[in-house]
Amino acid sequence: MKTLYKLTTGVVTLTVLLSLTACSGMTTREKNTAVGAGVGAVAGSVVTGGSTAGTIGGAAVGGVIGHSVR
View 1 (cartoon, rainbow, N blue to C red):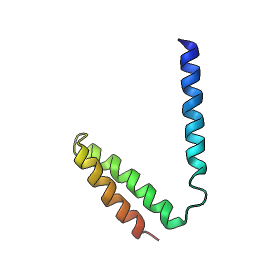
View 2: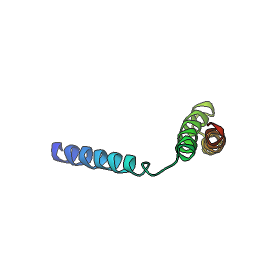
View 3: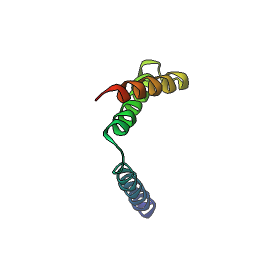
View 4: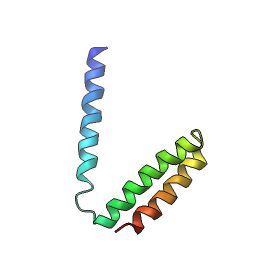
């Protein structure tokens, strides 16, 4: 069981590190849009109690707001 836990931890860590490098070529506006969509998705999910529609709606609204921020 410990071996599986260590393997899972390593894979998750590697995935997070690789996903962070994917943002290095993005413009500031693209980064703001991505962050806004992420925050909006979490907020929409929390406000609607985990509803899929609320999560998607929050991501859309957050992405638009993030895109508008300079």
